[in-house]
Image 1 (tube, helix red, strand yellow):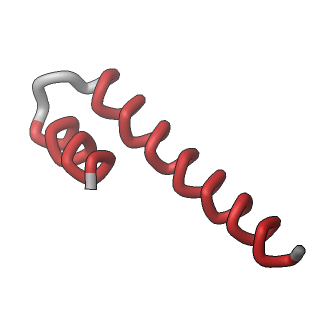
Image 2 (tube, rainbow, N blue to C red):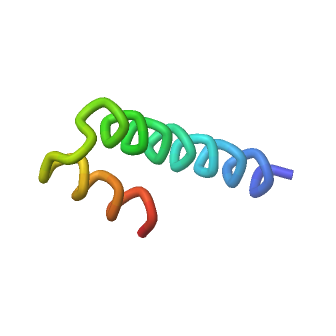
Length: 43
């Protein structure tokens, strides 16, 4: 079913974005940018 593959692609994209934001927050711990990345990852 096409819907399932599209959903899987969308989910993978969101998971990549969240991983990037969390990684950025971990690399720049304590900075304002890291705090913003953490908030965006949770949202």
